[in-house]
Image 1 (cartoon, rainbow, N blue to C red):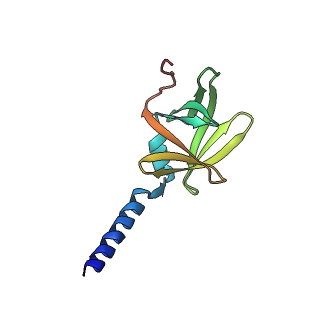
Image 2: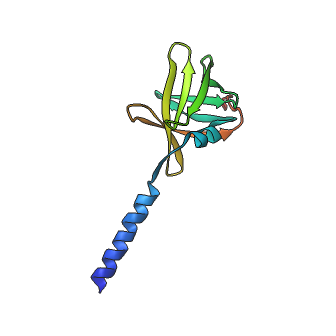
Image 3: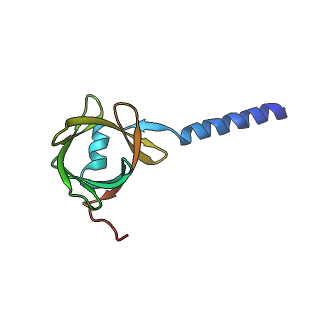
Length: 128
């Protein structure tokens, strides 16, 4: 009887661990809610960035010490993707996933980059 109890307990732990690392791909509506009127904060190519997403589809990308860039964003309900447009690159698509309470941009190759969200336009950098 002890062996059966131990196996049941182990199975419960494995299921709990699996649930803790559950990954959810956001829908287009969830992406719109997540981004609209908020700022993403993360690292891109090893450089800290902040990106504000206006609810009208404009976006501002800022890196410390660099000139900000103005672009556009939208979501595609058919593919459940975030799409951004930047001068020189055109429209690019990304999925957004949530894993363990964190958000990640996922490119077409499957590379995932973590980011945090804060309310409002917060493009100013805190003092170093």
